[in-house]
Length: 164
Image (cartoon, rainbow, N blue to C red):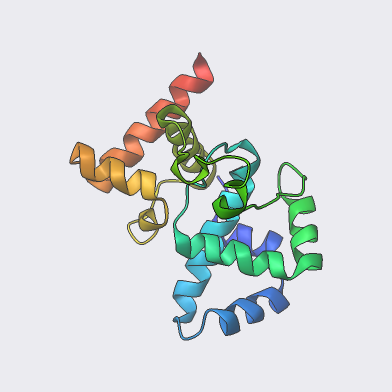
């Protein structure tokens, strides 16, 4: 599993940490750090995500801010596990050719696969982080599960996928 510290060490330069602190002020430093880490987790899996992005607006904002620093963003993409430039396009832009773009959602099985990959690669969701993954939070709500049960189910789901 990849720890939050390993993510920061591998992908977050001191300059970008400073930049995010300024751009996301007046958020506390800890909140900024958590959002950056969750954005890095998403970006590490993004090449495998189809459909709507599976993260909250707060994490999408971090992605947008990173994109604005084009050289840093290009370097980040080249260093991520897939090593490909991750393009970003808004649903408003997509509406020109796809009138249903704003209604497009990630399929349930794909959403579960993303969340299961999170648990496999980064460990269980923490209570202060699950809110940044709306599908995970919604599953807990719909199923009436505490966080530990969601994490156990996702880990079992991922193991079953790998073995099949």
